Length: 233
Image (tube, rainbow, N blue to C red):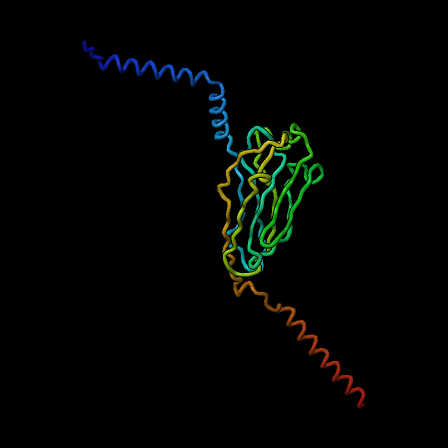
């Protein structure tokens, strides 16, 4: 005897199986928590970036590059550790200034280690999570703030590149519980075109100073001539 299975019955069974699978998924708390973590992570995507006010400094001038943190999530920042690479044949590093919102060097350890064509920058706060929270918040909410500022001198013409990186194990961002803070780096590299100094920018002898020098010489010669005439008389 043969039995015919209608297509409507098959479709109904498939829908029942799909519903049972969906119910099992929704009842799985681990899966739900995982989805929530992903959603929260996307909603609070902390951003780290290199920033500067000029992309075309003039040879011989100073310029500043800053490391910024933006859109920090619920947990305040307690520690960061990054490397910045640069070309020592084109730029020379000057001052290194850390931002104040991890303890300002009083309630934090600040460290900068210079090596060939690179500098490591790190700061560890000694403040509690609540203390950091009050520092890194205002009425509008979580602040965007500068982590560190680097002053460079342009010493040669050319394209100077600055690249941001970090150790995937020990570097990056950490909260007061020493838990890693996830982040993105939309601007991990800057390319600055160092311009030649224009002729009008090259220092020239001061006209007034030159005139004063010539006047002094003339007066000295005239004075010497008078002295000689008096000695003859």
